[in-house]
Image (cartoon, rainbow, N blue to C red; front, side, top):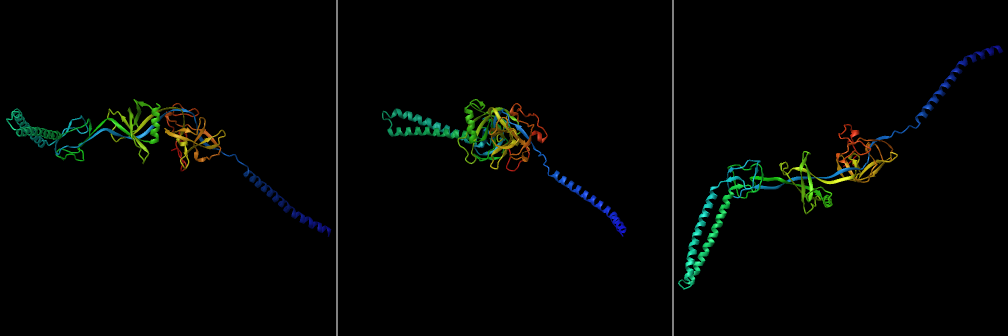
Length: 434
């Protein structure tokens, strides 16, 4: 019986041994899998190294710039005459070439002359008759003057003769006036130019009836040399220019400030003019005042009504700081500021004051100093307090900046790569360099 039990237990044990080994293997694999998952979880939670945002910067350096003030304006004729007939009649001839230069007193039109010639001849005849009557009255007065003393004639007759003589003189003067008036009208039938200048197209042709003092001119003569340039200047700007002129900072042309002209096509006009005068009142609607410059125009290149840019040279600023326009931002209220980096490359806001544009830069009057690093690219991806990775930008500084600014490279030819030439990037609404 014991042998039978031992044999059964041995058989049972031999059957259970493979199951136990399998169970042990499964437990081992499970522990390894859990260990792998635990290691994977530890790897995901391990901290990674932060990547710094790259930005482009320029370093501020003092440089010399020529300061100019550009003022928009329009040219106006120095002299202009709208030709209108002084007498009525039919135009019989046109004696000038359209678009040509005419001299003062040169005949332009001929109005039908016979009626005015007849009026002149009639007035001349009336004058001769009045002069004859005066001779007769003077002779009789002379004779009576010798007879009134011995009472050969009465005093009444003498007084009548004296009055007749004086009436004859009055008639002579009246006839002379009529003759002069007829002569004026006769001369008015020859329409002449009152000034020297260039005449435009003819508005009326031969055979047209014109009337004295009509509202529409028959031609216009304009003097082109010299020519006025009228510019609108803000009152504060005008005061500044006057102070600079008084201190000798402005370029002079004689005793007045010199004016240079930029033509509508962008080219520079050669001759130099001068500021003549300023209006005595400020326009209350715009706060501006009109200043008038006088420009020589020997080649008749400037024409009345032309839009030009008047440039006034204000001298040289040897300690100017220029910041690229693409690096100047503005708050919603319009206050200008820039983003600068400290020694640890941390971004911070720096309010600045700018006065004018010089090429593609702003002239900074306060807020920056030499050596400051200003961010001009990558502005949209950084915030104040962030640490960044700066790199120098190859910016095209304006020609007015003179020598290349230390710490940057100045190119004479623009680059084509936007990240290298400092071309403007899109900025958030309410910001910009203008």
